[in-house]
Length: 221
Image 1 (tube, rainbow, N blue to C red):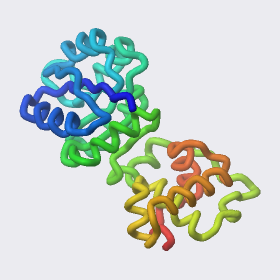
Image 2 (cartoon, rainbow, N blue to C red):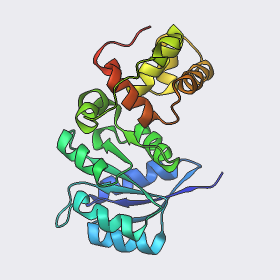
Image 3 (cartoon, rainbow, N blue to C red):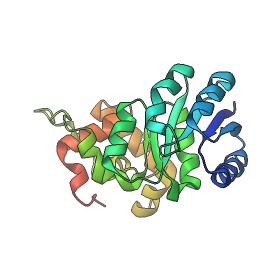
């Protein structure tokens, strides 16, 4: 398996060191560089061509949001994951609209960060699960309405339970634990349900769920 090459751009040296230790401990991840400010980060990104950039939103001088356009020009193939203290709708909306591939809170920078890095490296969009219910409605206000012939009704109860939780940001392991299933069975329900709905990505599933109001209620068991 090829390593995912990561650049960390954050003005806190202690945090960078901790993130490097966390990420380098994973066999499929490798930190290839660190920068303490945005301009140096763009220069390093251009030189190192990482696969994923961890970019802090708030830094002295130029912040991460203002740096996003230059970072994307420097490494157009790279996925940019915003690392921040701000669980704020405005920051999240600006980051995703500017082309960020994900948004993770610093207070969750542990195993969830590893999950987020792997997700964006696969081409997915990752948003910290605590923000999904509260903020995605504001980010996707124009979600398409459910079609007249609703494919949701064709799903089994288990498929609906699994897909609702996936749309809310739960991992397969978390869904398995709640529903008393194996992770493999959860993945089977997820894949089968997505196929019935004609959806290919989690982002598409979230839009579908928003249109139906599925994120407003407690998921079914």
